[in-house]
Length: 306
Image 1 (cartoon, rainbow, N blue to C red):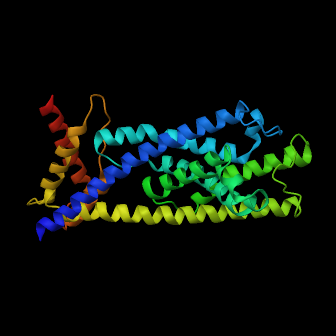
Image 2 (cartoon, rainbow, N blue to C red):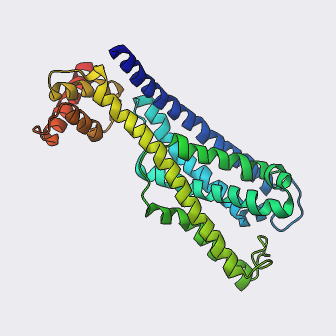
Image 3 (tube, rainbow, N blue to C red):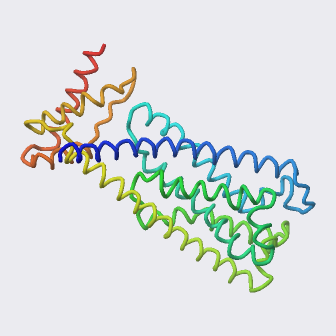
């Protein structure tokens, strides 16, 4: 029975590593697809002959949202590479928030394309023709899967939804100024064709808010699954079957110190130490003391290796 339980927990750790590798690959693909598609649009490879062709592609929310998604994926790369080196699969919360912002923009593009634009242009043209294949379909799917299923670090709070809305609101204001105030752009999204433009923009922002909530809920469900399994591992694995909680913390420090590189800052996994404290019902031992034990053991292990 113990072997069955241990094998299940080991598989969870392997899945977390596989998830991280998949995230690294998908981040690279998002960046590559964006560079290729934006470059082809800028050099007017498709020769559409409209004011949105060539450098005019930067007027489009589709292009800008894909670029933002690529930037957010690029910012993940150093942490993903470092995580694989250190067997530590967790991103800083601010990186997850930036990825959330990028995912909302591309999902909004995907949603509007598949539900609204495809009615007038046709589904095949909207989703699969020319750069639409990359910007309306491939990239949004990649970035959504990356944020929802792969980069599941950190619980996204409701108030963070408003941060994710900022690019949509800013673009709406820019679009209003350039189209209806200055007249420098044509109304390429036809916001004033079927209904008054204020109603159209309010509708788009409302849809965008719905997108933020959908992605937030899906991300948080995955985050809960991953967090619960990590917690289960440290509560049940025989790797930390020790007489006392202090021994378990020392063992954790010795393991983590294997991934130390010269000049590194020392990271204390306070969340894991708290779980080990719970496992041993060690509330009588202050967490500060356990942190000190961890740090002392970690430094000792580094000195031994040196």
